[in-house]
Amino acid sequence: MLRGMLLLPGIVLLVVLDLYDAAPGEDIVETLPGLKNQPRFKHYSGYLNASGTKRLHYWFMESQNDPKSDPVVVWMNGGPGCSSMEGLITENGPFLVSPDGSKLHYNPYSWNMVANVLYLESPAGVGYSYSQDRNYTTNDDETSYNNHLALQSFFKKFPEYKKNEFYLTGESYSGFYLPCLAVRLMNDSNINLKGLAIGNGLSSLSMNDNSMMYFLHYHTVLGDDEWSMLQKYCCNCSKCEFSDPKDAKCRSLVRIAAQRIFTIGINEYDILSPCADGAPAMDENGEVIPSHFPSMLFRKHAFSHAWRKSGQMRNRLGLDSPCTNTSRMARFMNNPAVRKALHIEPGLPAWVDCSDDVHRNFVWQYEDMRAQHLSLLKTKKYRILLYNGDQDMMCNYLGDQWFVESLQQKLLKSYHPWYYEDKHEGRQIGGFVKYFTNLSFLTLKGAGHMSPKNKPQPAFYMITHFLKNQPF
Image 1: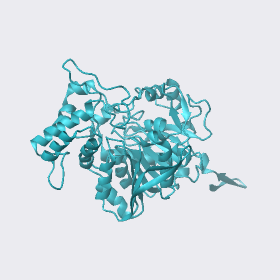
Image 2 (image 1 turned 90 degrees about the vertical axis):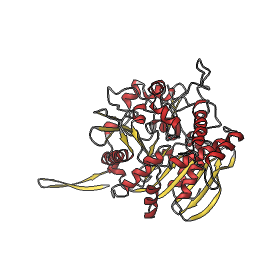
Image 3 (image 1 turned 45 degrees about the vertical axis):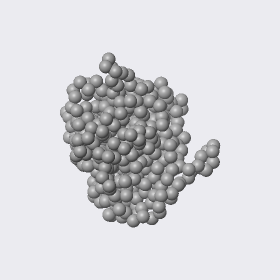
């Protein structure tokens, strides 16, 4: 609440300004197509300014609880190059899209039950975010810089939320996006950063790739004979090196394993779930036709290098998530009535879940996020949660567990189960958790890469307890 004085000749008027009326009226979503009943909470969609001519699309959901005091939470999907609208309408947002993309239904486990949630499409070129110069080459540091500018733009639009606690959340390549952004926010006293929660995040390229082989063997994707050969040529008495092997035989074995991962029709994001579009077809030579472009794994191997450089392959494939069907999201987001309701800039191309252009032109500057996490933890001011669905192959729990251990923080409580109250089945195990000083590692039992989608109730329990700084 601001109290001011308006001076007129001979008159002094006290003017009371409620900051919670300061939100931008031009961005409010009056009527959202697909909903049977419009929400009671306010939500806004529009654009935030970044550097140059870059404008990032946002969709902001006020809390259904107490928007004035609840924290502000940013959600970002990964890629790099994938839209956070996927998180909103299929994972943890208040509206979930129907299988045919024509309708929305309310999510009883929406994260805006306990927080004000900002969904940000980043970097420019992703979703409905754009740059007038159409130059979508970027990198980790430039992306974090533009995300910081976008957040500053957000708080200019919504000054009433400046003092609220602020958290960064996301999944997948947000394991790089968010720590890079958080380090910038450490020096911005106008944003009340309290912590970050990263789901199935990529935290270390080498740890993720190396742990992948253990994960594949445990889940029987690699047989004992193959595993024995990998151990023979890629391992010594203390360590295995699958990520960047020097031995030629090891490189060959890893290349074969990588081909299997990317081509046979395994749901990489939820290894126990079926492949939505079916297993890939065979070409005229009896070879498997790959169904997608591998997004981040084994990037140093000859297989990956050849794959990425092949113009024929690049034209043939997209970045669409393997074994998932994104058509329902595209149908909804490209509905002209939806575009109008969300104040999407006219003339922009059709929305796609993941941008090939952004992904292929993204420059990875870092091998891991150790320095960023250690900078945050050193201040003793921020809480960090790394959580993993234990059925995800792409960013598997073992690699993130190794990463957490590598930070060498003081152990507060060793690995143990955590529980939540299921509405129908009573008390259930949600997964396992390990506590360090200002750092927690947690698994979600039975969840894949998109944990809030696979296990919405335990994921909601998890984020609620994290935001309230309560034990899981």
